Amino acid sequence: MRRDPSLDELGAFLRARRAQLSPGEAGLPDTGAPRRVPGLRRAEVARLVAISTDYYTRLEQGRVQASAAVLDALAEALRLDGDQREYVLTLAGKAASPAAGATTRQDVQPTMRHLLDDLTLTAGFVIGRNTDLLAWNAMAAALVMDFERVPEKERNYLRLLFTEPAIRELYRDWADMARLAVSHLRMDSRRHPHDPRLTALVEELSALDPQFRLWWTSHDVAVRAGGARLLRHPVVGDLTFERSTFVCAEDPGQQLVVWTAEPGSPTYEALRSLAAAAGPAGEGLDGAA
Image 1 (cartoon, one colour):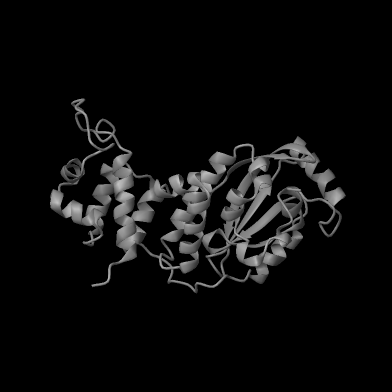
Image 2 (cartoon, rainbow, N blue to C red):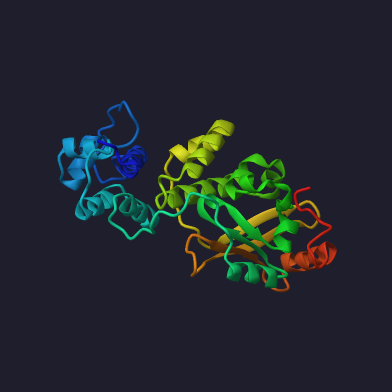
């Protein structure tokens, strides 16, 4: 019988969460006795959830399908946050999940393209499945890099974070941002677990970068949300942006990500000078050159 990759991933995720939770954090007495492996034992998780150790073991092995009630109890026992709960429920087929889409690269929706072109002092990107970079505007190119120079099949934002030295230098908090991006990809992967392009991306980055490999196997998940972006641009210096994300109604697999600056702030004034230097077509400056 063919194994379900989603259940295998669910089991791997539960193992990772169990390993990161101490008995004290789970509300269990800690005798201080040495443990062969970090975190909770399978029997301890099973006791917290009121299921048998054998059943929980088979759940981690991807051999059984858990009920929504058991998954809710596991989420409580393992102290899962909202994003992690959604991830678990989707993998187990207990939450609404978009139908599996084509495994080819997406085309940017025209409405998203028009929005990008209308932004002048705001950097905008359209991110598709697997963090593919589908489109960007002139300010994004001036701040980050000339994405046109990257072959389309390699135009993936997560891949660029790990393979472009200039982008590593651009982010003042590169490690935090790169790890967060990995958690976004892990979260997105629940929607298209059989996508060979996702598999190829993970295999490539795992072979290239030990940090990616470590973060991917930690099974951290998160949805894209707002937050600060801290850059050190080679031309205009330190910049601080607020990041916002908007989902495309025509294709929820595409998201418009924008970096905005408070009017009158040093970052806003730096953007004005950068836009003037870049020109109306966004040419003349390459933020990662």
